[in-house]
Amino acid sequence: MAEKIENHLTEQLCEAMASLKSKTLIANFLEDVCTISEYRALAQRFEVARLLDEGVKYEDIVERTGASTATISRVKRCLVYGKDGYEAALTNLKKKRHQTRSPKVLRKAQFEKERAERKRAVRENE
Image 1 (cartoon, helix red, strand yellow):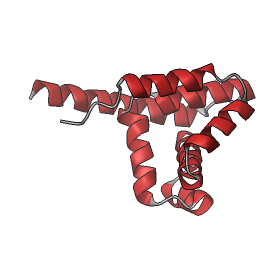
Image 2 (cartoon, rainbow, N blue to C red):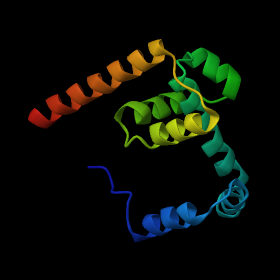
Image 3 (cartoon, rainbow, N blue to C red):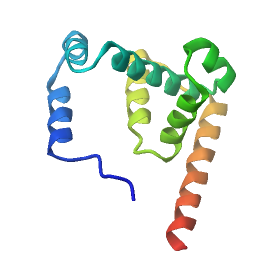
Image 4 (cartoon, rainbow, N blue to C red):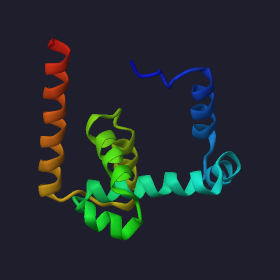
């Protein structure tokens, strides 16, 4: 069984981040909390999520970001089976930038979500 991530420390961290009201304050916090490598890895994963959300192929994502296929696969798994954290952040970012997904990407994302839900249901019934 996977270890539970949420506890009073992670809740405190999320509360602290949510309390920061500007990009500058958030960037300063992340620079203090993370190593340079960790901060860059977070940024890279988010870019991978954004590109996957746009329907960009793995090979192109590797070329654009330098991310490994393992990282891309992990982000993809989170997009499909995760708690929708990437999706919420991407949606908010798009709203802020007034962007929308293409109909083709929307259909593909919906199909993958439905497939993931069916797989979850099958596992729960086993």
